[in-house]
Image 1 (tube, rainbow, N blue to C red):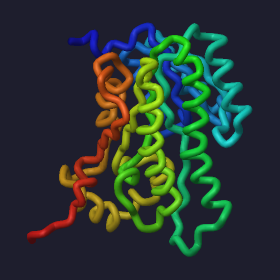
Image 2 (image 1 turned 45 degrees about the vertical axis):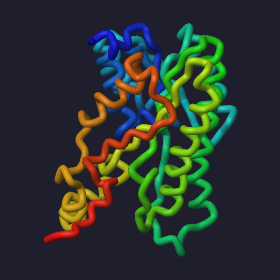
Image 3 (image 1 turned 45 degrees about the horizontal axis):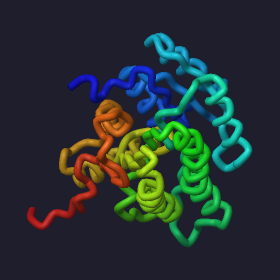
Image 4 (image 1 turned 90 degrees about the vertical axis):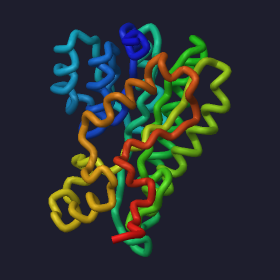
Length: 259
């Protein structure tokens, strides 16, 4: 069974690898045997992390990437294929968030979140798929969120972008499935990252959110390992267009009908 999850000789691009979930995903893939292309707006920021991956015996390159800039996306993919002979896996993770009441969201707030999370994810997938289509093989994993299926106050642009990721995943899965490319959405629930750290420092909020999670706690990094390796490996070859929630059950609704 272990060969079903073996990523040896696979090459994976992980966008948004400067911190948080992107690094968790990259580390899980490296431990399963994959070589990596790590991206960040400023790739020098991720050199220490790249060295950690190299210590596992993997080949790694770091590349600048601004997903709001099409030329930057094209340059990133060109650099990846100039070093590696193929791209097997894409973890479409780069994203951002702005928390505001809906009536305070500005035009630029909306564009920043939606252009980064949704438009950027599409064009990264498009440019990577151009190479996957030549090989007739690929695993694209778009990173969504529990907000891909649930709405949360104060997160209107983010929820819209992550809901869009779910729909985009299904569309691309339908279009590229016959070419050997699977496209799935991995949707984490409440995980502490640098982006939302301030929330977790608020005990009242933390108690509130844990009360809504059936498993009773926020996610931990290792909770994502199995899911990302599964969707990146040959073991998931008959799964495409799906959204896999890693959320401790919060997407069930988590509303108590009894005391």
